[in-house]
Image (tube, rainbow, N blue to C red; front, side):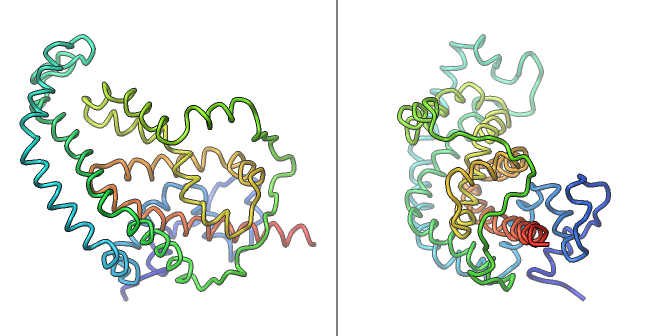
Length: 306
């Protein structure tokens, strides 16, 4: 018998829990499967993609909301490609010819090793793919943001949970880490390295690495991992009415979980063009992760009241 929806998602990650951290050893049977999934947060990225691509209640509304923007962006992108690809490739050839010590690249070698493609063409395609992504994002703009929010809501609804499912924050650690939000360093970063300025700085610093296949995407994903994870769980924190200090503590306690999940999510979102699709599926995966985290919160709350 074939499965679909939440049942298929459960089957996809149906591994039985084995050796886990001591804090998870006393969970009831009803929480065992969720606990098993919580041991490897990047799996929720896979779950999100699977759900989006197979659940018509998710992909049909998302496509209906984004269809016209994708069509207009595709037309503009094709025109841009036709007009600029040759110019961009020539610029890259000149750049590589004048700075071989910086890039370590030549026409068909990387650090002296032969590669199966022309570096000029690869770099031009990668640069053009990034530009096409921005073009599509411009035409999608508000609609893709609505599609993401609806994907979250639909995923939560598919689990049969209403607004009352999201309870108040419960501290799970006996000795939680001490976090401070209002520090001079945070204020400095917020005032001088936030928003557009930080985005531009990252893009400039990563330019040399973009000439190496995969390296630029991996580094960008690592730098964006925590911020991406925080953004993907924004609706979870809002639903629980968590304060900034609670959010910071919650994420600090699960720092490497959030970094691993955010890295996998940012890696997919960083892919040229199709990364926009993963910005929706990652929201689905984040909702599935939030569902399991909340079940864990309920369990800890019940332990506190016994």
